[in-house]
Length: 287
Image (tube, rainbow, N blue to C red; front, side, top):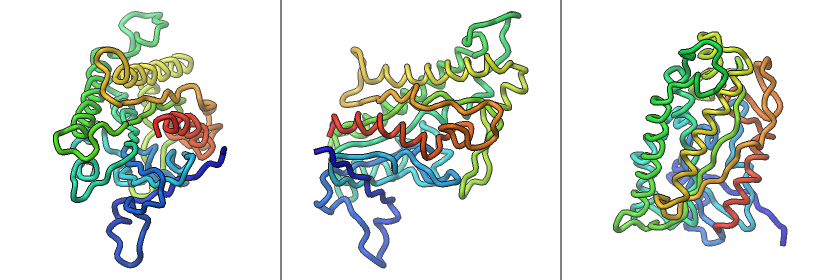
């Protein structure tokens, strides 16, 4: 049976509504129940509204409780493990639910928001390697913080008494952004960014190296995330879907919607659909 279902997506605010009966994780007509948390790739803050979650497909009727509402669009990965809603819905027997899967989008904001601290002019003239344009110590510090946050998230899931001990956690590796003068517009946060473009511009770094350095940063983040899912130090039941090389890059001179990208760091509807196909396939295996 190749039938696929779009998810029903609700927020904690929906659970608190009293005017009508919203969809609920208690509704046993859903074959799968998923908890989602993360950055703006999961929220509906971007204009026009678009989200990776809405493009996911499932082999059976699925409910997603999404904690990444628009107010979280600028939250850093380091705050996820301490998020009271996240902890309550994972851990607390009175308010939480037994999820089939926990879906997380995190790490990208930590990297992009620190672009000014990470990207630098090379110490030697004629540098041609992307890492020559990066403060490797600062990058390593940020990636270590991202990894620590994920470890804390897994530890929260597996604390004694947790109703979701061992529940699969799935995240993704983003995709290669094009540094360009294309800011994002958010419903509640106004115009933000661009993030990479002004840093490269200020340092006078040429177009070709801008693309190479941006790709290098995404690859380093992907490597840090994937390291958590394999090897002797792998986190238990923690999975990373590699979503790199999925999207058609934006044209570097476009200042708005271009190819698969809505702005400098967010895909458009078409882009999210492509990413969701990969993420859905990884989730399907676990469900």
